[in-house]
Amino acid sequence: MALQRDSDIIETPIDSVSVYDGSFLKVRRDTVRLPNGHQGTREYIVHPGAVVVIALFDDDYVVMVRQYRYPVQRVIVEFPAGKLDPGETPLACAQRELLEETGYTAGRWTAAGEMHLAVGYSDEIIHIYFATELTAGESSPDEDEFLNVEVMAVERVIEACRDGGITDAKSLSCALWLQNVRDGKWLV
Amino acid sequence: MALQRDSDIIETPIDSVSVYDGSFLKVRRDTVRLPNGHQGTREYIVHPGAVVVIALFDDDYVVMVRQYRYPVQRVIVEFPAGKLDPGETPLACAQRELLEETGYTAGRWTAAGEMHLAVGYSDEIIHIYFATELTAGESSPDEDEFLNVEVMAVERVIEACRDGGITDAKSLSCALWLQNVRDGKWLV
Image 1 (tube, rainbow over the protein chains, first blue to last red):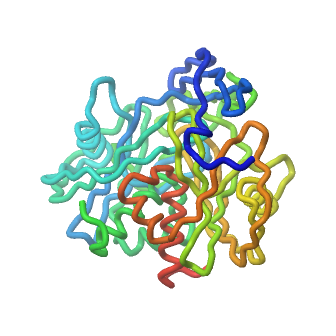
Image 2: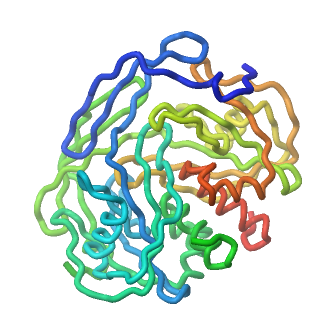
């Protein structure tokens, strides 16, 4: 079907119901009007939003975390990240998550871009921050959160994105930012 | 809590139940043994896996799609992508999805990396392919899928990743691959 304008592909909500209200995941199922006039169903996760932090030492080293991610049954190397608490601003969340997960505080925070993590089935948006002028301190992960902090050379992070050492999509997206900012191509 | 080895952060399953079996989303809730010996709960989407295709014309132009993504209520610019059918190989899926969504067939297919899309709540893995030696033809999207094909300059795609025109995490991850392969830094 040949379409040419964005207005020709928009879906509009008709009805929306909560179909799963878990301790962590909230799932809704909406009935929608499709562009061809038919009705369709869209199921998706309702997410509070999140942040991810690129915490840099002098451009050459970056703070990563290693965390067992149960859904994929493996330890994942990723940039520090976490969900917004109710009423929390993205910047406050970024500062809290970096401190809780890694113990670092930063003298300088800069907002970079935003990403939609899983557009097919989640409304999650992740705000990307750069954190510099780092000071080490004590971490305090959530009670059910277990992770190891690893300071990695930026070059090694980029290599790991190529070699399969880093497979987490939000972290690959951060690597795009990190590479371009470090090369002076993108400004933050 | 200071941990140092991956073996100290692994969570092991105790029990698993299906909590939502929708027409599109399948959600499970597992009881797990946490590293501290306590029990915890993990909720996650069970996904069949997917592919995403970087379809290039002579390195300078790439085939993108514009698709209304209901969960985020906006038109998203993304690389062509789709879910594996039962029993389908990732390469066959990539060839099928590129053809269905854009009408293009490719003379050369190369597997690049893999990404885990949403490690916090989905087991989805996305296989990244480069497709070159493209031939145009007729697209045939799924009945409930509406999208516009847009051939974009690679430079414009990279700019859009910086400027907010592209926010889809799988596409930002593909842009990292595209940029590094095009610059001759990564080989595929």
